[in-house]
Image (cartoon, rainbow, N blue to C red; front, side):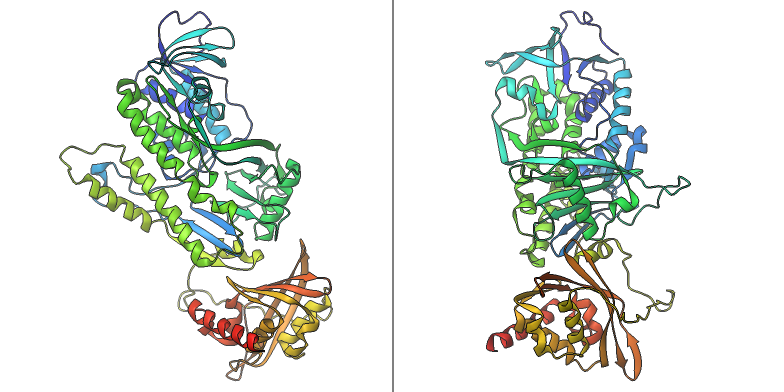
Length: 612
């Protein structure tokens, strides 16, 4: 109900400051417990907002608290990270049933991660919250607190209109405004540098008859992209979140370094995803108005007092890849009725949960701190597994909020088993590929072909183009790999410090390139080996060659699958070459695929080049 200005009198009520998702959820929880309270704030606007991709506890809790609003939920089956030459997949396996003892402890059988249409969801949830008879809506903004430092309690809240409401308890759900903490003087610890975030919603493309484009292969994943100055116009961390009929696209940058307009930044993000094989505008062509704001990561020294609680982002904000913001607000809502009946103990439970959330930040800083091209696959694997372990541990603490029956004395051991099961259900996969093939590697169909049940695989035979247009140095390298020119001609076509990137492995300098080319040309598996080039195209300063190996194996004419190589040119010479070792197995056989074996081969090439 909307409260008239004179409608409260001197009665003290629980007051919820803020009508974002955290405030709405707390109001709903109090109403469900039969607790009359004040909800202060305006109706949620139609502006895009952050918090559209949820972590495990956020997904479980929003489904538990809002079962009637599932039309705004979309499955998040995967989280992807494009980081330099690697594509990292954080998968989430789904199970029909958990272990038999899961129901005894309130453990979920499976965890369906979610994307949430926040604009539709927040509006619908607000309408339901204020329609409840226990919710008294005050469409006003807080301006002052009557706070007693000795008792660490808030007596009343004064609003911009001049209205004063006596406070039995105050939940600050105002997010970044942090009204209560600022007025009381709770120390706030800023984590790292200020950031600038720019994001917008993109509507789905339609054909002339108005039919929406089919959902792309990446349409069920949160895709993170580390923009870096070697390949992109700016450094930053971007996101792509599919939400049914639209996607959310945004980026976080250092405002002291990147001052480009919001439109330019989004153009760069679109181009960055396209460079990795995700055509955002092809499926979602209509870009909406951009939101452009600065923000900080922070944590307060404490999140509660005698009769007040800093809920959700009002207390703590960490790096968005954690997807923890919504969860912190929903957990506060879950605990809200108990906070009123047992303030100290319940607030301490929430403080412990928020301390674990704050600890996430340091473990994610590498995403923007480190050069993605200098992080090895092994290092990336360790960091990815650390992220999974942190998420699982926090999820374990979340499900532990549900007290098991007293007779189940082994609940801690059961929780550890649950956490182990969740680790098994959260595999990490790291692929290495040329930039333009990363999305295909990430979202392509996974599986080993079965010659008994699968349809025959059609491999087209390419015809070499006789009029390829592009830098002469690239065309001559094609001739070298085809055996038309000797490898000793390479110095005329590559820079002295040419870099050859083969998956996560690197060669450097003319002699090491010659060693690699000689290894391919001297292989005896294929007779009459040629490299057939079908196309050479340029995109964002990078040249991409579409080609195919052809030759004779055991007296039968054979071809490799079509593949791509990419080149960068400095002046009139090639300065960088990127390829995958998988495309060379047609020439060498599968012996180069094990990483240890391939590293040994490259070590021999490096040693030989040093001697030369």
